[in-house]
Length: 209
Picture 1 (cartoon, helix red, strand yellow):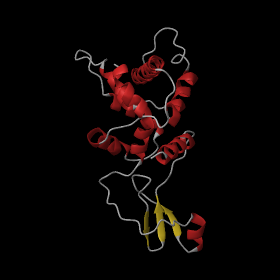
Picture 2 (cartoon, rainbow, N blue to C red):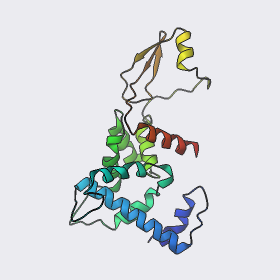
Picture 3 (cartoon, rainbow, N blue to C red):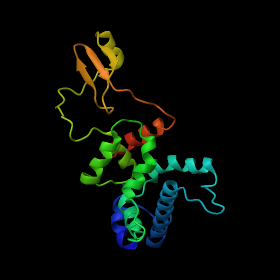
Picture 4 (cartoon, rainbow, N blue to C red):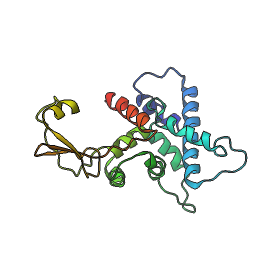
């Protein structure tokens, strides 16, 4: 199954992978199986026996940052291929995309992320978990977009010196920034312990494209 997708898998990475075919397939299989089982157990709170991760709350949440590191990403399509083998009409479960969203949504501190998820379900193909988070943070396609007249954006100190006043906006997402009558309205950015890691990986991902 993974062997059949090896060419596409290798093509998903920016740099050549030096592992031989069998070793590469084995690594992907082990990593993908772990990720899927981890997501399912987090969703179902299913912990049996002497589980090294799930019987230790600290270890369980130590895995979360690793799943958001750009260098740790597995292509979402291969997770989907393996996840589909678990499907059963007798025991229906949410899609892998829904389970992934349920896992990461608590780490996405913004309003309107549910609308972003609905947009993904119907119009997008997710590349990996970092891409999923990126899509949930960005403006919705339904918003009106205006062509930028300049790329030279002054910083906050320069705007303040020019007489611009700042106030908190009420927009539903971070990109809902408005300027009118000398007042710049900016939505609130909520910063938590994971914000730095999230933004750094989003920046790294976007710089690759």
